[in-house]
Image (cartoon, rainbow, N blue to C red):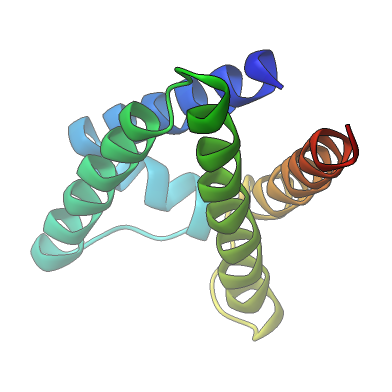
Length: 121
C-alpha cells in the first residue's frame, strides 16, 4: 500500500506543479481549449490544491497510510466523474481527457482493493 499511495501522492503533486506553472497547457490537453485570465487563476488554485493533497497524503505511519489512501480514493473517484461528465456532455475534450478518466478509474480500483485487503487483515 505504501508504494501505491506514495506514487499517487507524488503524481498528484507533480500535476499540481504543472497546473501552477502552466494551467493553459493542462487545459489544452484535458479539455482541448485555452483559458482566459480567470481560468488561469482557477487552474493555479487547483494546482496549489493538488500540491497540498500530495503533501498531506504522503505516507507516514500505518494509520496515516490508510487515511491518505482514503483521501486519494475520494479524489480519484470524484475527478473521474467530473472529467467523464465533461467529456460525456459534449463539452470540449482534449487528447488526454479520456486517458485521465481511465487512469483515475484504475487508481480508484487499485486503492479500493488495497484498502479492502488491509481491512481484511
